[in-house]
Image (cartoon, rainbow, N blue to C red):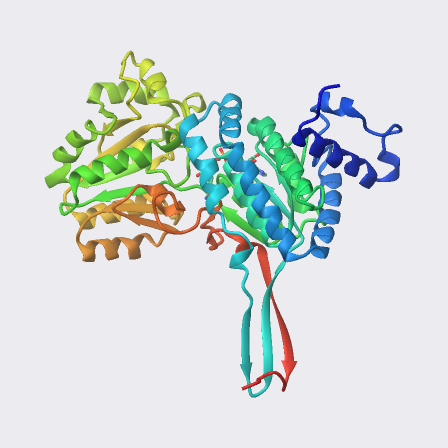
Length: 483
Ligand code: NAD
């Protein structure tokens, strides 16, 4: 027999442990042997139904509570190492399964959350002392979290949520997007193997073999689930908010960009293309429409072509509308994008109107009127509408309207402090990026930590381990004010 790799040994160990922990009626008659390695459908942390997954997660969470913080920290470190090693593997599997996005950008996303999602260091307790003694405020886990993840960032969301939730002392049951099921399950198995190899409990991260919208709703109602964390569109947010449980909801956006007459035009053109084309525009923070002040509009539009973008002519936009929209509902209203084109490379989209562009082109710019449906739609494909407006105040008002109250993300290019601070106040978004691409707001090329669950509807903003905790107070009366 050939020698086993460390990974294979970890896998066998975790499955043996799994068998030992299974309820009596469910134990296999024979002990697991090496042949488990050739049956990848036997998932580590993967269960047939939501109920069993929550029971396993609950048990794992209680075990985690018995472990030291030092070991919890080691678990997080091991997760970071393993996910970094697998960043490309996970990116490739995600693209193969979903057909969304660009491999090089998905690798960046996986590495970003792996490195920059905060760990247990952000859970510092608060202490207050005074004449009446000492009060300690500590951050406690919820227990079992039910997490629902999107198809657009399948692995980056799972990695980010797992690091944050485990760092805070929770276990998690994922109901992943059915169209990203295989890569998500693979990711969850890797996480479990890594946690067990670090000395942590099995099933701290669980899922089910066949996730559906019905199983997501079952998870939302399950008595073993103490907190919901959902990342997706309006439907899942609405469902979670009406579940009766505490829910952290990360919903859709339609991030506008305003460019005023004081902006550095070259910088704006370059960075708008970088942001809007990131993973072919599927990320919720990606730039989705631009309002540019009339006096510099021609210069900005000409500059886009110097930075890997192609500017479309009117007749090409008309043709393209017929391709990318399944349905339009008139001026200033969101249309319905044909899902076939979501997250596709611009070359594949423009081919449908008989237009060929170089391989280095990442984005098409569509100069349109402000009422055009592309301005009002979260398109999630690399075609960026740009509308001219008479002045910056009107640009900001239109940006506010086009964002549709999601309060998610906004971007501005300007050197005028009054304009910048006016837009920040008017937009009132979880993320406002000035003079840089949207992704600087999630820690890529900007200061601050990373998150792929940006909870605007429920107000947490970029989630981190603190978001997944309850504050608990412990009071010692009349003692331990020692000075
Ligand atoms: P989606 O809403 O179609 O699906 C997201 C998840 O919710 C999936 O797992 C799906 O199975 C589940 N779901 C959908 N409707 C449900 C319902 N009624 N009940 C229970 N579960 C339901 O979204 P998607 O296409 O996977 O992702 C793209 C959307 O998510 C975009 O709108 C994007 O802006 C948003 N998003 C937001 C963030 C954020 O941090 N705010 C991050 C990523 C994606």
